[in-house]
Amino acid sequence: MIDPFKRLARKGLFLFDPETAHGMSIAALKSGLVPACQITPDPRLRQTVAGLTFENPLGMAAGYDKNAEVPEALLRLGFGFTEIGTVTPKPQSGNPRPRIFRLVEDEAVINRLGFNNEGHEAAFERLSVLTGKGIVGVNIGANKDSEDRIADYVAGIRRFYSVARYFTANISSPNTPGLRDLQARESLAALLSAVLAARDELAERSGRKIPVFLKIAPDLTEEGMDDIAAEALAHPLDGLIVSNTTLSREGLKDQRQAKETGGLSGVPLFEKSTAVLARMRKRVGAALPIIGVGGVSSAETALEKIRAGADLVQLYSCMVYEGPGLPGNIVRGLSELLDREKAGSIRELRDSRVDYWAARKV
Ligand SMILES: Cc1cc2nc3c(=O)[nH]c(=O)nc-3n(C[C@H](O)[C@H](O)[C@H](O)COP(=O)(O)O)c2cc1C
Image 1 (cartoon, rainbow, N blue to C red):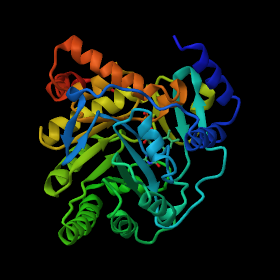
Image 2: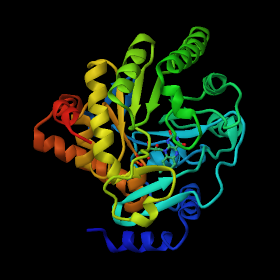
Image 3: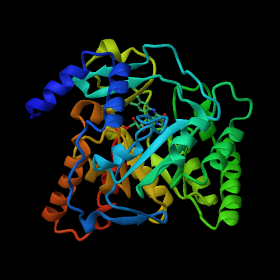
Image 4: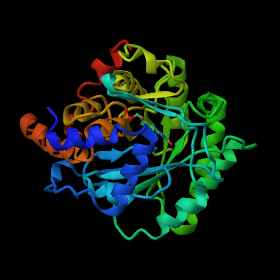
């Protein structure tokens, strides 16, 4: 049951096309009109992953705050971390509008934005004046017209090294033609070598090692997953993010909107992205951190990602449907689930359903 205030706010925002509504929600966060969430810190939710201490395991996924306009306002909603971007070296306008579609009955979104963003400099300037201590990751990508995509990722590491708490190399957006080809074994090896060499050089120079995660698609074959796991383990990568949006349209109710080109996210992505997460956990072993993302809509679904092998969890699409109270509700709900499970930490529950999810046909 959604409360009347939320229903009204949602009805109001849904009068506008999704991209306009998104702009309005960013403006509301900037203005301070959205109330901060009161959460009592729960030490059972706190954990150190890739050398960073997260107050709780729930993060805002990339794509909402592409230009680093509202990272601190997002953290005040209850998120334990947030990820800005994807940012590309040069500003770019992305694909023609309309390019975001709501599938209301499915609680899903299709987007074909194509990395619209203001470029490295604009995001860097905003991040360099942040005063808070919250964890803000920087998701980096390549310009559509880039002649050397790997060089664009390396430029991202160099530009943001002084302000990023972690990096995500996003090679899994379906909306930049050819980008997902970077997931193929030889390209991936070259990308990871270059990105991690830049990171290691800057770590040496600054005395601070910033972790790098790799964000992958859910649309991978078993061999594709084998290759990514092998390369992830062969390089000093700090973790994986599983997953980006899917090209699949299986099981959707809104057949009209389902025909739109782009990546699908939200509730219908949950099963597929969770199965791929578990399969990757089985492949990489217990030590490599994984962030689970795709269709998280509640404390239960967040915990299910953790049971399937995730250390941390992110969401985006379900906030479109549930509103800004969602992160606080999930974090409070996780504490209640830990009470019920009599668990001393979320880490205790990680992997408890890896086999179930890895065997799941999706
Ligand atoms: C409108 C929109 C824009 C997105 N843009 C990006 C992006 O720029 N970079 C990225 O790595 N992921 C992007 N994503 C993917 C999300 O970060 C996330 O991986 C995906 O939506 C699955 O999570 P969800 O089901 O909770 O939305 C975008 C998603 C949406 C809905």
